[in-house]
Image (cartoon, rainbow, N blue to C red; front, side, top):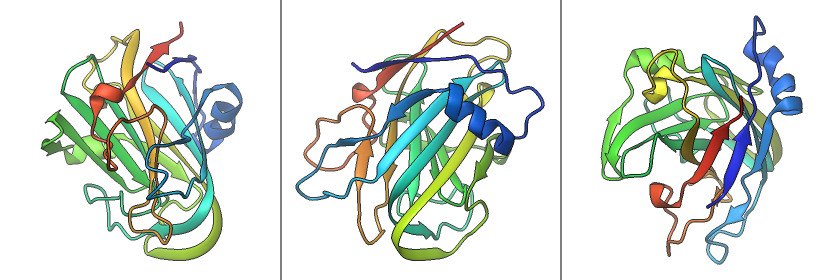
Length: 215
């Protein structure tokens, strides 16, 4: 099982855009570079995720350099995996239950609570609103561009939105991080930890790694 150690980085009064370069400098970097289904989907954009946390939230900056840019999802609660998309799946402990957080390059979020891979309950409107976002293409819906494109998305996911009690941080959590683009001109499916399935499948918590929060 892959493991990573996430540093505590106090955001203070910084806006999320101001905090992004701090996160890139001080955060733990994870490379989303496992090409699980190379034969059918060989495209591998360069993807790094920088992680840090404080008492309020877990912060992730995704930095992507690859082909194409697609942002057709109309808004929060709608699927984004067909767009240029990055994802964070987490669970408090080993088992079937988990939460998936997915973001396209425009900052649109799809997220749901799962009791199993086949059971999904969308986040509430309040929960979606709690997830702060900054992106190089924030709010730029309806893009369909080909050729090389580099972009970033930073997200702040409150601990309470991950079902933790306010003021009580975990010492660790299980997670995987992904990059996909199902309907881009170069479909691709990358993960941080390997997935042992014959076909693309991200909803597999048995393959999650572990993130430890450093004091």
